Image (cartoon, rainbow, N blue to C red; front, side, top):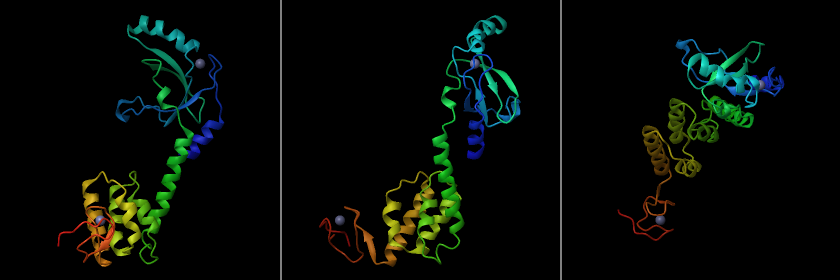
Length: 218
Ligand SMILES: [Zn+2]
Ligand SMILES: [Zn+2]
């Protein structure tokens, strides 16, 4: 997907009506069933408000259809196919210009996640907490994958998981519950508990927290 975009951006297309470089935009997400999809995730669009096609389109649409709108010149990437695309206003596509840096970030996140997923099978044998945290703390990963990572926390039994996991807020209640249980198991394995007042790790037997000096219920 990233490769497609980078290849498209090399094409440097210009509008035959005004000469301005066309902007690569995300195609509007239209339900496939209504037959209006362009068959491409991306579209090259002339976003020049002075473009004759766009500037002259308002009167034409008002006269022909009696509503407010105009046309933007559009070409499909990977072909010379072009269309006059009806738009309801000036801003119709300005919010959907492809942000290459953002796509690169998404791509890096995705590659990192794939690598971590492939390491989940062997991470317990290798005592490697990193892929488990990568999958578990990635809010864009699938819930079943994150639950699988959570189930490995107790097996790995590595205290280094406590801080990063505690510092993450899980939006899914069932995942949060599973994580809480796993942390509890890891702490119990190490004869530790979290102080309910200052959150520092202390001995399970402690009656007074050595960090904040609070008395703890038995
Ligand atoms: Zn133009
Ligand atoms: Zn404390």
